[in-house]
Amino acid sequence: MHALDRPVWESLASRHAALSEGGPLAKRYLPDVNLFASARDDSAEALSALAELVKPGEHVYVLQVPKIAVPEALHAAKTALGVQMVATRSMPAESGSDSILPLGDADAAEMLALAQLTQPGPFLARTHVMGRFIGIRIDGRLAAMAGERMRVPGHTELSGVCTHPDFRGRGLARRLSATVSAMIEARGETPFLHAWKDNHSAIALYEKLGFQWRTDVNVAVLER
Image (cartoon, one colour):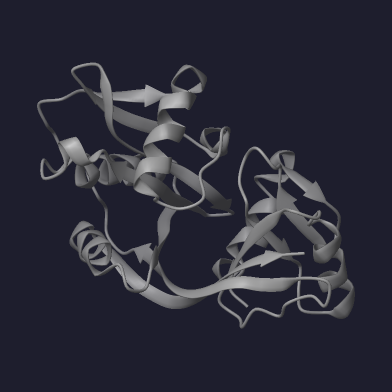
């Protein structure tokens, strides 16, 4: 099995171990960092360990290529299909009139508000600590952002790409996506990403940037 087939597990078990909780059979991100969780495999022991990480009233996202096996103690509140895309060529950073700025703790509240407005995927108060995030401010407002999420050995995920509705149509998402991808490539890693299978506009943008479909992925929201 390729490492990208279970990217959540591979990330939590390696480069994001410090942001995880759980044990050798199942892990999840810290509750204020992200909602993703994963069993090591589909064994009964691993699935039971995954269920133990989900407290009453909580839900977690499972994302993987193999069909998702739901632990007996949990149920799938939602299931969907996504796509996983991998960069196939270099993406030099694109120029523009608005400066690209690093984002961090001081910007966390604005980042969370933008993500809640545009729904690029699970994004919590400390999701920005998963990797480097950058953004563009226009008239002092955070107009767009993009950054890094799961970090599998040799690969880093481009994620959190979103633009405020007031600033769409200016190519900000494309420019930020290309810049984050170039940053990843500069470290000798390959960028990859996920998108909902029916988000045709996003997929078309990423194809223009040089990303290619690798595989469909299964996504489930599990809760106790």
